[in-house]
Image 1: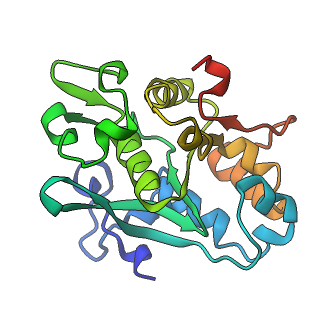
Image 2 (image 1 turned 45 degrees about the vertical axis):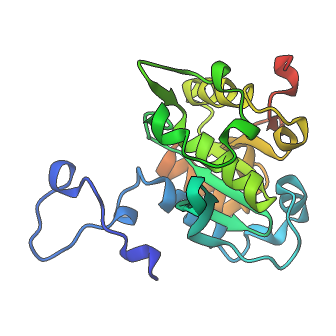
Image 3 (image 1 turned 180 degrees about the vertical axis):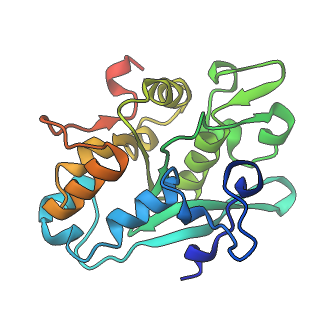
Length: 224
């Protein structure tokens, strides 16, 4: 219920003005948070045990949305990073219509305690003093600190996001950490969802199940 009340940050510029209604993020069909909740709050989503195996989670685990996790920084400080969803040991970042994974200054990213331990600085994408894929960097650091797995859910019609993912993941030093990080598409996920959910996703979001169920894991097949 708390998540349903999250204010839409672009309501003033993109949504109709209605003085009797406060627009919330989940009012928008472009909201990746809404899409995530539409799937994982459905009572039959985990009826197919293959879905749990596909995601690497255990039976009975309940999803939490908008979870604040602590990512260690220098001088014993921490960044309260918000993760879109956590279920079991899996953290999920959801993307739908977002343009990219954001950027941040090198000075800001250098403040994370484990940054140099987790990443090869020089191979990370970026320019003009900024790192690209800041959200990915931050979430991978969270997965490292919390010893969890991390997954990005994105639309297969967005190859640009896939390219941004691989550009960051090829800079991760640890092969073990890379195996805990992956990117899946909504279309791959739809393959294992109940029929009513699949029909809803196809009708509202244009997301259809893929014919071939695969996973897009870390960077192993990118010759890293």
